[in-house]
Image 1: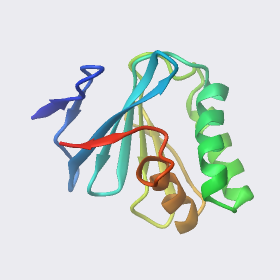
Image 2 (image 1 turned 135 degrees about the horizontal axis):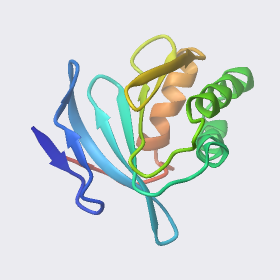
Image 3 (image 1 turned 45 degrees about the horizontal axis):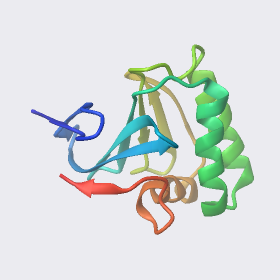
Image 4 (image 1 turned 60 degrees about the vertical axis):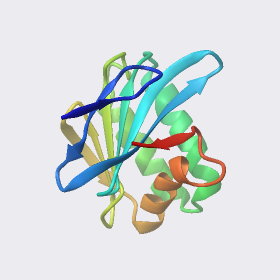
Length: 143
């Protein structure tokens, strides 16, 4: 079964592996809905692009969100390189990015293909905070 994020109408599976869809949100930049995001109980964050952006712009935006939440500059640099490498054609409309925060490393997958795992537990926690702390990049709503 799938659940549509109301503002973008992008659909998310209600389950991903052992995780259940908990919350949905939309990352906007001005009037542009850049991507819809789903948070799963397994610690996975699924980003589905509703607007295409280049690899450097997408990775740069996530890195900028990570920096105030994580002091491990080496892990952040590894994450940026991993994501840029996994997006050779950029994050075009329809691209699905999965970030797995439930382990000892941050897992990164693009369109169902694992592109790497980087950092450690502090990077995983920091990535989750992008969508869960008081300064989250977008409002998330329970499903």
